Amino acid sequence: MGASTGAKLSGMQKQVLGLYRGFLRAARTKSPEERRQIESIVSAEFRRNSKLVDRKNFIYIEYLLRRGKKQLDQLSSPDTVGLSYLNVSNPQTRNS
Amino acid sequence: MAARMALLKHLRVSVVRFAPQNPNFNTPFSSLGNLLQRRRFSDEVRGSFLDKSEVTDRVVTVVKNFQKVDPSKVTPNAHFQNDLGLDSLDTVEVVMALEEEFGFEIPDNEADKINSINLAVDFIASHPQAK
Image (cartoon, rainbow over all chains, first blue to last red; front, side, top):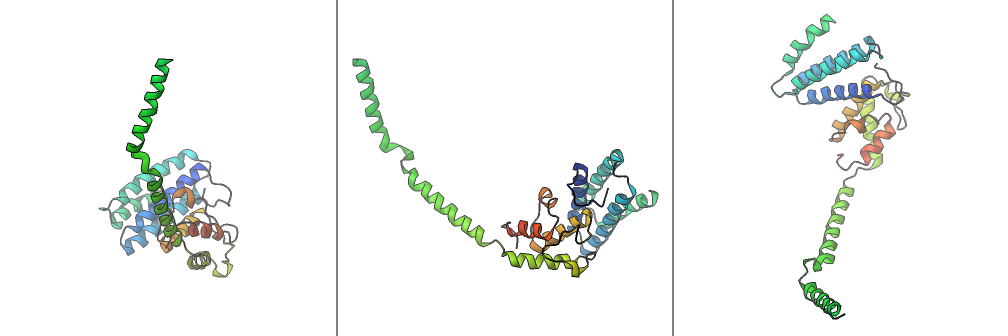
């Protein structure tokens, strides 16, 4: 799904990019070290899925979008610091 | 006929009587005042637009500092994907970096359209909140 070649973005691509933007915005609200860590984890995850997931696998992409939105909601809470996010995302990275 | 005359007379009188009391009587002046105020405001806003060549310089610097970009390829006319080899995720990161450089938030629907340095400069230079 990832490397789009300059053509117009599909609705789903826009959603994915919007989600990515949301994560980067949420990361800005954390401390500088946490922010760097969150950014590297999030960008690695998006990039991994952009290579791994077939761009026509809409059902799976929709599932990833929903899961991402939930994780973003958790991350956006001011109570959430990067560490608790790490605990959430690491097992998934290993599983998939 | 008499009734009509009476009606007309009544109307005429009532118009004369009402006119001076009409609260809208002052509108030409107050609306002029509003207009002037609005003008002054819009001039202030215009004054805060950034100079386009300054915007170009700063955008080019931000893009050059982006780790995946070869700084020698960055020109004011460069296209993020065609010339700099960035993908759509990189483009999101560049636009986010521009947001931080210029201190304002670019809404998603605008950010999705920015795919070259020229478009970024145009958008930022036309945005009054850019610092």
